[in-house]
Image (cartoon, rainbow, N blue to C red; front, side):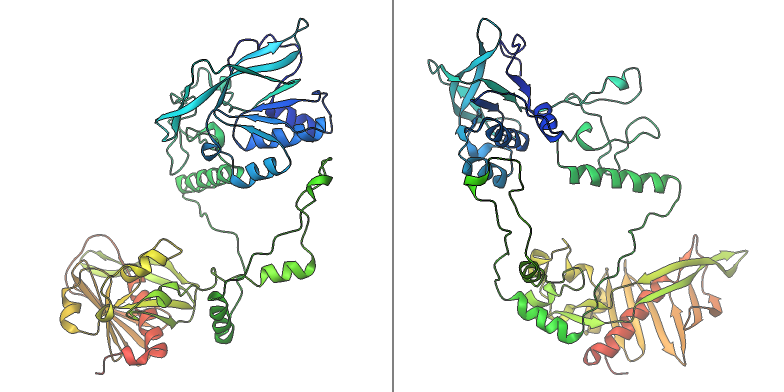
Length: 460
């Protein structure tokens, strides 16, 4: 913050983060009895609440826009104000007032009104002529934003943006310097939360693993297993509006120290809050529940973890080139019955995973003519045969005497139930690799629907 007097102050001007760090380490700086904080973000709210405890008196927040434009989270603003601190909206600092010894005695300000929106979409503060006034104070905490210290990059090939952050590829965090990644507040996206910085680190780690052809997987997690009775009870809970359990808070009149404000749950409260869990990571079914035509249906499968063959043409012969993994963990799946679906979009609107269930889930066709016209993700089951159309090309999988027979325009492959190839015949040469992952996926749909939704299987 570059205003007259701020660099000349010998006492009373603090960078908010420095003040917070000192207090966290157990120090209790003498900031007088009247503290003032310049800024409207979360750091400013922390600084004003800390100042309130150090002085024993309400502190003042000076912000150049209105409360509605403050970037701090609403609960932080509310927490600061409920403790009696004062918000001076539409006020800009113009000069730090000092005494003859260089100690802060006040902050000279002007009042603003909101003008036209700026590049960030927020309305710009416009000074009201003749509105000068002074807010008396003993100390001023500056919380108007930080810039990263990047002098260590001087002379490097790492590129910086106009705003001072490191230029990155947003999907990976990769910079223009080979082998160098960046994230968090130092990157061009600007200040964010610690959680966002962790996500940046994770994306960079994944990109580095891909660069070296290394696996990058989630840590193993044991998901709860729900019975059909559990799911039914859980769905009944979903239609009820149960209030959130809020932890008890320290009364405002007792907030004179740095004791915790939000206290811990009692065992009874913790159980009540845990009971509100809707098990969204275990099953969803939202697209089933909201479909007005009942076009989306649930079917059950047996989890699959198998190695399936890949085929290539070598010297005019079809050969097994290798194996690749095929895995499906979730036993509860969704199928879209195309004949009932009018693509209204309800399932897309309500999908908590940002998907398009009517288009992304397996689309089952009961009508032969419609199936022959589909170009994407189309399935049709007739007896022990499942057909799949993708890109206008049809493939077929038949279950016969404990074997799987896969057919497309290029090959016929006979496999055992464990996907071991027993025989294969080349219909016409092809380039690249033919994977049996498609056959494995077709088998999952065929067996799941045949067992869970047999009425959708067309008779032979």
